[in-house]
Length: 185
Image (cartoon, rainbow, N blue to C red; front, side):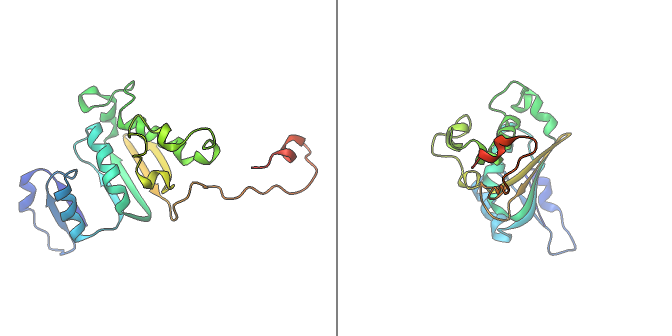
């Protein structure tokens, strides 16, 4: 287990279990990330309980999601702060972390709209065109769940945008709607 905190007082924390590590530093600085990765570079669970600033939440997610093992879980706590402009959020702030994660719902379902628009264009509010992180475009986000003051993101076992697999229609009689027999994706 690795904990990371910007508070220097955490540097004196000591644990009997040698598997527990505390890194003091800003999690969004490359030097801090390098120290974390020197201890462990793949995680089953990552919990963001950091500054609660909208930009920091986005930067941490982009920086650390790749460190999750397939099937791993990324949790963002205290997301109620994202409704406040004091924390860089606001319900009408189209650049907030909440609005980013709401858009991820659509990205998870990209197989149903990608013929009309690319993920790069859809997420241009947050990334310059062509700069969307590859893990997003490759379908590594399996699911996202919004709870009271929590966002929970699960990493796919396999990166794919075809989340439902191939559609199979069999038979030649449609009791309710014959139109389904002509639909072929």
